[in-house]
Image (cartoon, rainbow, N blue to C red):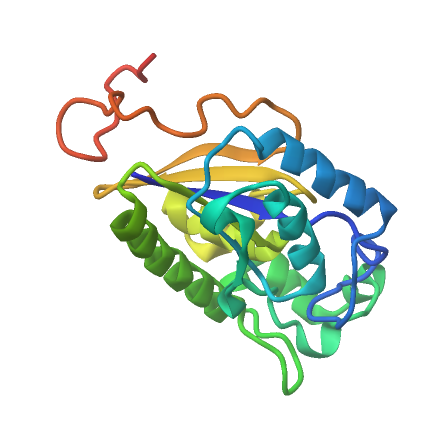
Length: 233
């Protein structure tokens, strides 16, 4: 029952008006640094077996705030490029209001599984989901093998990547992933079992962290991954 905590990076000067993508050197702004400190304080009570980040600066800074003051493996941020932002190609750095007039915008909104971003560096959304979900599966296996089935780890990533991972956990086709929201500095928790994932919390920007991790003696009866009939306590 490995638990994955997904944290989106804090705000930058480009978050919202422009599509940041893989813009180099883009750091958290004052608001983003405050958000990173706040989410670090919220998550401080939770033991983490590992702390993983996208290679982009805004994620590294957010993950660094969470790692500060921790001991062991979670005091070091490990980088996994597969959790990096979608490669938006020629769309990178452009204003969203301008991009909304492009024909591809409607594809991204209604049929994202068919969306391929333009330019030599452009990536398909389906390919971005595949790399991120593959990374999650590999990290789940590694964390369970090294730290036991009740361990938790944290990945700091980007909005569309988090939404794509959540869609996979919910069994949704990628074309439905725009129904999911991942705000800056939000926490999403997914508990992976042998039978199915459980989305424990989604886009949480201020709640307490009690109940995010399973107690060792609270597994539902039956096979690993069974959902309690009636919804449980």
